[in-house]
Image 1 (cartoon, rainbow, N blue to C red):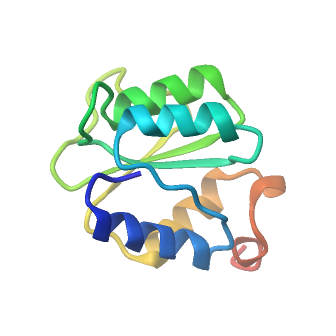
Image 2 (cartoon, helix red, strand yellow):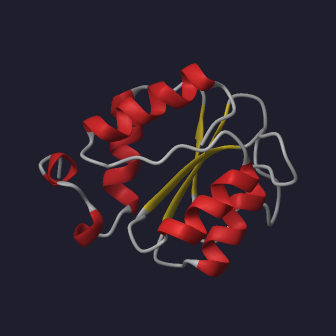
Length: 124
């Protein structure tokens, strides 16, 4: 989830290369609505911090952790660092700019083996 369409497409490509089917949202409110509808299919939330709407990426991450604890969470930003209690337990923060390799390495570490697509399982 990112409000910048080009960055959102880049992140989707990185995740699809890792073997994920992606759903995209341009703001936090849309992301929560999408998660509420698709939570059974979702194993990973990848969100930017700065988002339009009533929820930023930290709020989406916290709500996701509370409502759907089976979903692993990555929060990214090039401008904002997480403060105390902004990130839910178990979530990972990644600074921008990042590479596909950096993202794949983080996902290999945080995702349970049963939630790793085949390309990520081959990295371990």
